[in-house]
Image (cartoon, rainbow, N blue to C red):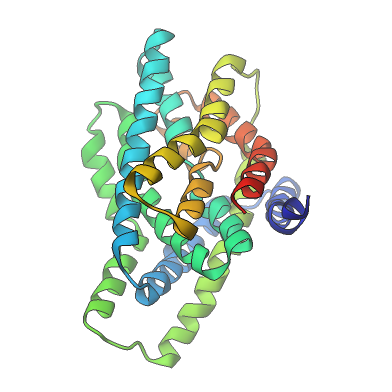
Length: 298
């Protein structure tokens, strides 16, 4: 119960604040999101990679991210084959199960549960997931409609991509960023996660729940919240990853469906109502599953 009160409840309080303000004032989410994507997040990413002690752990994180993605692609394809699904239904399920909300949900949970060191891992994983989602997420949403070309273009439209490149160049060149430059970067970086959490609450307020496809929502919810920690544990054990990094990646991998996938589903007609329903249900259900997982890992 203490973990719920100290870790999960504060996070959901901020989500709820974003949800309420959006229901009340009907704000332009795109404007707020643009500030977060183009200003706050790049500062957070730059600071994280500039200060990071890049070692084998970061390589393991990349390998884990890809293996985890492919495991869920296989799981969803198997389910779709059994249910005789093709096209947009398989794509909608893929978006709902393979891509987790590791950024504006997972990162603050890790910060509260594991502290600053765990949070540094979480931000790195968030960047990896953003790249993966922009490549594979767009591909599966489009499925043959020039998906790869558009996906690659989207990766290079992400300011965080350039923040990573710049931070690595500075670090490997052994350049020290002046204190008066880092101070505003730190201020903006500190604002990134709270604003992202508010945006998630605002996005949830915009989701319209209609008659749910209970069978497929149940499959996606069980896959995303209950099967994922076991798959993550097996992959990490196989890679020989232990300690704090292992706990952080298991938690992040068990996050609910990324709300961003609803935008892809709408834009490319990949069962948007189903994806929206799954994002909403998994976010609410995760109150129980994430709390339980933290109890086991702590």
